[in-house]
Image (cartoon, rainbow, N blue to C red; front, side, top):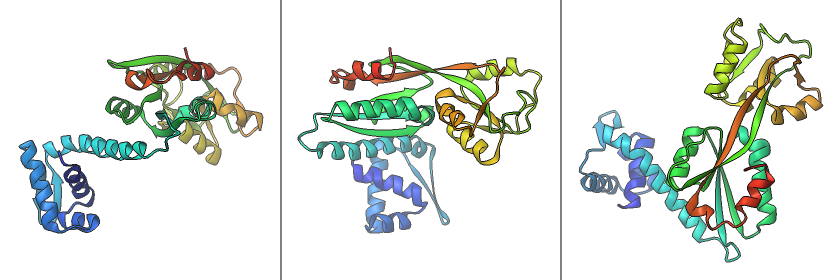
Length: 279
């Protein structure tokens, strides 16, 4: 399958027009049309619906889109890695949940960076769906995640669990019925235990899917939230945040999932995971 055709297909979807795609790619419209036709003929499927107002993907086009994005990105990554200097003897692409980057992710990155000068590193931030897709497609070699989804030829390692504590911008904030309380999503298990602990409290008006976003919100506007202790600790020390005593704590397990094909060539993997507390 021609990578130019895949890139052209993605550009058509991004611009919503064969004309605009040709302008962005700096090729003629007939070239764009020919590439799209070759792709459709090769797959035996119509990929694009054409209208006077523009184009939309067909059901087959939507299914192809995520594979095309992965293949184009893999080719970009392959070109980049093959051009690395001779002093580089290994590549480690780390996928990391945004909330795990402060502390665990950064510690792993820094440990490999400082102890393995022959290893080229890259870091990708994303949500759980992104991390799983990247790892399974080979875009990343290791994922630091809260939701382990190890498949065949992948190995899972336990990392130190996050301790979730209730903090507030006000030292006298109530443990319950705080109008500034923000719910920060931390997985189904946390959701169940939180609901049981606060069964008599009203549903929070504001919620976030990331501890980093929740933290930014309460620092900017005031309020309280359950946050990982490792993220909140420096702010508690500086008194920008205050821990609300008497509130229940919760735990959120974290994991490293490694593609075995990459991990088998990393003699430093066990030491690096041990350095951040991985088993």
